[in-house]
Image 1 (cartoon, rainbow, N blue to C red):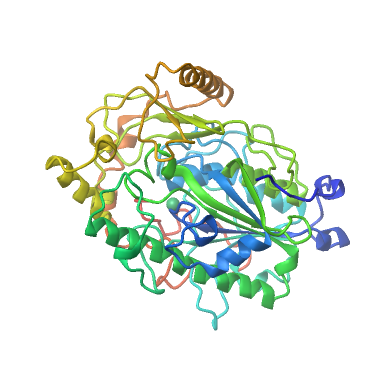
Image 2: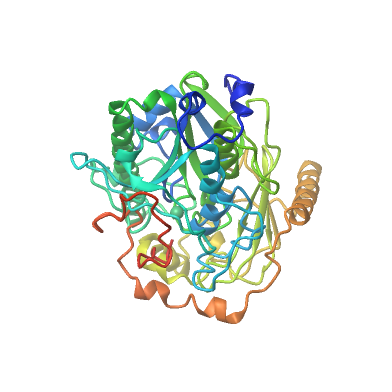
Length: 497
Ligand SMILES: [Ca+2]
C-alpha cells in the first residue's frame, strides 16, 4: 500500500500570515476540523474489524485516506494532548507526567506556542466545539487536558453556529464514549460472537462482555461522527474543510492505555480533503500525532516553529517517518519512565525502572476495568497463558524487542535472542533512542519533587464516577465570542484520564 496523495499546491504551503478580515486568500484556504475520539485503537470497520458496525467512519475512509500506523506520543491523555497541541514531544516541554502542572503555574518554555496561537495570526478562527444546533443530538464538553498553564486566550468560540461566518477556521470536537466507564447507545454486540478479543486477554465471559462493551462505544462514536459530517454538509462546509479523525491514545484494555505496549498509543487516523487526497487512499507508513499538528500548520500555510517535531505527512506523500517514538512517564502516583522506538518492523521498549511491574497500582483502572481483576485472579489461580501472564511479572526486563511482523501483540521479547537479525535491530533501535533522548532534550530523567507526586494521590477517589470526557449532561460550557481557557474556571476534567 502506498499513499496516493495529490500534491499540495506550493502556493498554499507558502501563504504567509493573513489579516483577520476575510480576503480572497482566506476563503481559498480550507478549514480544518479535528474530530478527536478518546481511548481507542484502530478497531473500526474500515480497519477490518468485522465485530463492529461503523458505516459513517467507513464511508469517510472511502472518501479520504486511512492511516494504519498512527500513534500518539503517549499512552495516556494529558501528555498526548500536550504534545498534540504544541507539536513538540511532551518530554521536551516538561509536560510528560500525566495530570501534572495543574496548580503550580507552570508555563510552556519560551517560544513554545499552542496551535491556536500559531493559526490565529494567520487568520484562522479557533474553536473548541461544545455547543451544537439544538435540533441535533450532539454533545461534547470539549477537552484540553494540557500539562501546563493555558495561555490567556485559547479559543475564539465554542459554538458550531460561529463556524460558517468565521472561515477559515480550525476547530476540534471531542468524543469520550470509549473512555472508561464506557458509554454507548447503539445496537448491542453479542459477546459470544466477537472474534477480535486480543490474545493477551483471557477468553472468559467477563472479558468478552467488556470487549463487546468497548466495541459498542465505537458504534456510538460512529453515529456522532456521522452527525458532525451531516452538519458540515448542511452548512455547505464539507468540501472546504479538511476533516481529521483521530484518537488521543489507545484503548484501555490493561495492555493498552497507560502502558508502553503498542495498544497504548496505536490510534485510528482518517483524513478527508476533497481534491487533495485521493478517495480510498491507504497509508501504512509510521505517523505520529505530531504529524497531525505539522500537517494542520501546512494546510493553514503556517511555518512550523523551531522545536516542533512533526512532519507534514498528511499533505506531503513524499515524506516518510523512519522511526516512531513514544514515552510513558508518571501516571497518578505510579512513577515510571519508559521510552519506545519502532521502525517499520521492530519495536523496542526501554524500561528505565525495571524493578517495577508493568501493571502498577492504579485504582481508577481497577475500578473501571473488570478484566484487570479477572485476570489478576486467573493469574493467581495459574489459569493464564504465558503471554497473558506477562504483565503480572513483578519486574520488567530493562529492554524489550518485538518483531511486529510476526508478533503484533508483543508477546515474545527478542531482546535476548541470538538471531543476528534481532541483534542488529536491537542495536539500531537502541542507538536511535539514545540519539532521540539527546536531540529532543528528554526531561524524563529529572525527578519530580515528592509533593508533585503526592498531590495526585486521592484525586481519582474524589472524582469517582463523575467524569464523562465529553461533557454530556453538564449543560455545555460555551458559546460566547473570544472565550478564554477553562483552566481555573471551575470545570476540571476527571483526573483519571
Ligand atoms: Ca484519552
